[in-house]
Every structure is written in C-alpha cells, then in structure tokens.
Amino acid sequence: MQPIFLEPALLECVYDFSRPADDDNSQTENGEYILQIGKRYAVYMTYSSYRSDSVFIRQKNYKIEAMEALRIIGKYRRPSLGLNTIVRDNQEGKQIISALFVNKNYGYTEPSKQVQWQLRKESKQILGYICKEARCSYGGRTWTAWYAPDIAVTEGPWKLCGLPGLVLEAEDESGKLRFQAITVRKGKEQVYRRKTDEPQILSRAKYLKLYRDFRENPDKYYGFEMEGESGVAQQNSRKNVYLLELK
Image (tube, rainbow, N blue to C red; front, side, top):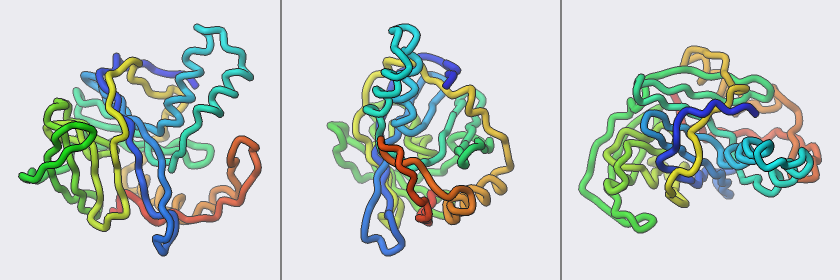
C-alpha cells in the first residue's frame, strides 16, 4: 500500500452501515466506514482499510517487522461490506468513485455534492449534537438525513453530502439501508488515497452496470473468498441485491 497524502484531516467520522443480508430481510449485516475531511478533500473508505493502512504507514517509522505488522492488521480488521471508495475534491467540484472487482480497480468521475436536498424543520439529538432533518431523491432511492449544523462541514457518508453541517445519520425510504455515525473526532492523520488503487475510469453508466452485475452475480467473477483469520476458503455465492444506487 503506497499512500498519496492530500492534506491534514480536520475531522474524521466513523459510520456503521447496515443492510439486509438476504432477500427475505430476516437478517441484517453491518460494515464500518470512515470519512476523512480536510479543507479541500474528503475521502470515504472502509474503516478496515484505513486501520490496516495506518499500520503500513507507520511500519518503517516504528521499525515494525512484517509478520508483526500482519498480526496487528489482523487484530485491527473491522467488518466491511465492500462499498465504493470515494475521493472528493471540493475545490475542483468533482469526485472519483471506485471499487475493487476481485483483482481490478474500476471507477468513474462525476460532479461532487450534486444531491439536491429539501431542508425540513424536524430535529433530534445524535451523539450529543442537535441535528436537523433533510430529504433527497438520488440514484432511484429517497433518503432522509440528519445533519449537525454545529459541525460546520458540508460532508456526509457516501454521496450524501452538501448540507450545512455534517450528516450523522441517513436512511433510505424502505428503512433497509442505513448510515449511523459511531464517533466524530478531530483529525490526527493525513487525508490520503492509495496510489496502487488508481482506477480504470469508465463512464458512470458502464461502471454501474458492471458493479450491479458484480454484486448480483459474484460467482461469475470469483468462486471463493478468504474468510476469517484462519484463511479458510469459502464459497462466495451470496448475492447482494441491496445496492445504494438503482439507476
């Protein structure tokens, strides 16, 4: 992992994302993600990747042996559902969305903060912050978000940004997809992206078509995945039909 440091992080917010684990909604699965926020950039990635990367970044400085680094990484592993990584450049007004399809990284570029919000009067408290309600329709789904005006950044999980305050909670109209902030903290690290993860850029339409096929037909792309610290190969035939974007 070779990081490209972009700027100091002002804030970091860790989110829990939940969705149905099967077609009949009898079970729910969760993953943790982190949003790094700087003056110009915001990067959204799995928390597991962030924590693992932090070990590699410090490996030389603290003279950590390779095997010890791998042991720490195993300990740091967090649940992840493999959502897109997003690098948002608010100065240029664009964002790059990417994902790893087994062994190749694909992505597309689009304008940042393009979600059109309707601000509402309702409020509630989340993590000690008074949050305001807002709603939007994006990608074929209707979302309700709760943002904290006292945290004066226009950021949020995934693409749910552009409000006058940090989004701490968001849920789609069906109630099946939900982002919930776990913690908000001052930034201690650099906002970064991975140089090795430079994606092959596609059109948005082609990317979404490929991503949908990958999520709905996983066996077409690979027959097994490494699972758990034991590294036992497991068949990866379960489909994921609860995509954030439907169109």
